[in-house]
Length: 106
Image (cartoon, rainbow, N blue to C red; front, side, top):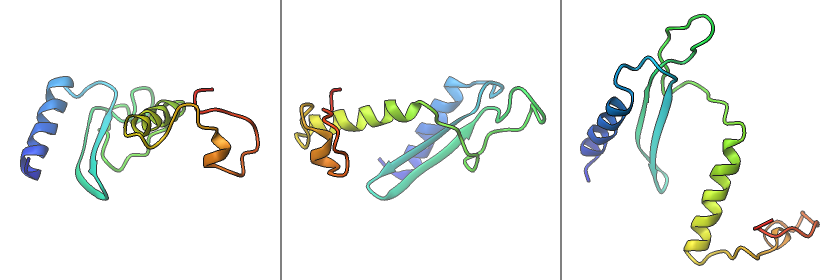
């Protein structure tokens, strides 16, 4: 798929999912290896306070809070799927400075 086709596809998905762009903002980034293939944003940056109507951009900083746990779990499961990691691997085998007896699936 060409970059322009990817951009069109991403823009189409964003427009379809957020047709009026008046809801909470989203940012989308598509990366392959070390290359950023697409960056896009749609929706509002701030629904509650001034300015309530500013659009989110690809330069806005987003607080991820507990989403990092979800992201980490997805990455671990991808490594398991690729045969690069086992769920029974002890964390200290990967991070020796962690001496506690934790397993990946703990």
